[in-house]
Length: 217
Ligand code: ATP
Image 1 (cartoon, rainbow, N blue to C red):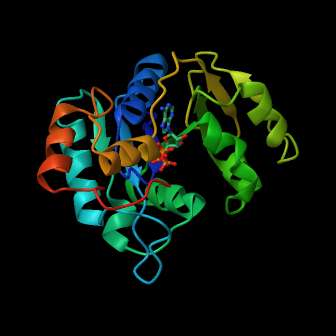
Image 2 (cartoon, rainbow, N blue to C red):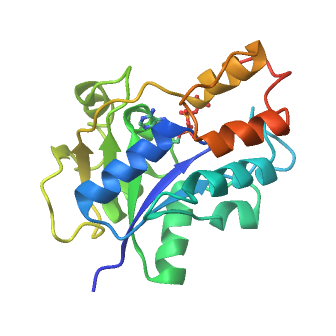
Image 3 (cartoon, rainbow, N blue to C red):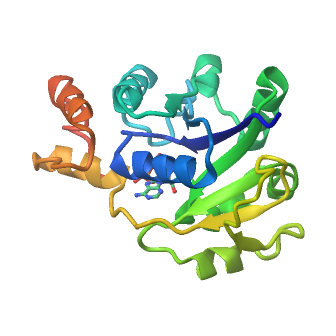
């Protein structure tokens, strides 16, 4: 039996409706029982630009997935702390839980894949699903990863054995123009967050006064 599990990795600083939209679209299009949001940890000695603490990012993620059927939180990297490469995390989750990870990326992340650790092995061992995001086209992203391994990007085809590895699927989704940097910029400028984050997350940000003093990146 396949244990295909969608995993959307990111900084989630903070989680927003674009993440939830991408995860929900992948879950329903691929028929996955669940998609987990997988936040990275803040490396202890080098925050690398992350603004909110692990605790705050996790708290917001918990609020965000609480009422979204089939969406979960995977705290593997935060529990262990420090820097983790995606390939190592996916291998570890496969080993520890018997999962067949399906790694979900936005189009910007797919375009940057060459800068990741062992991108050829990542593509060989795992299936990736790339979803649309304003600002990047699938053609551009596919051209940027064309030199990696033998992988070419194909449209999502309803594959029955998703999670087996070795493929990059493109799943067309209605683009949602929202980013964490825009949320942080709005908080710093005192502007409303409207419907860019779930109401419970907006409340949390307000109550904890997050992102107020930080210049937008
Ligand atoms: P920042 O603005 O700080 O760069 P971000 O909004 O891109 O942050 P991340 O946590 O870095 O958020 O993103 C995690 C993953 O979610 C990446 O694969 C990214 O491409 C994807 N993603 C983020 N926002 C969207 C969106 N609006 N639509 C589709 N995918 C998204």
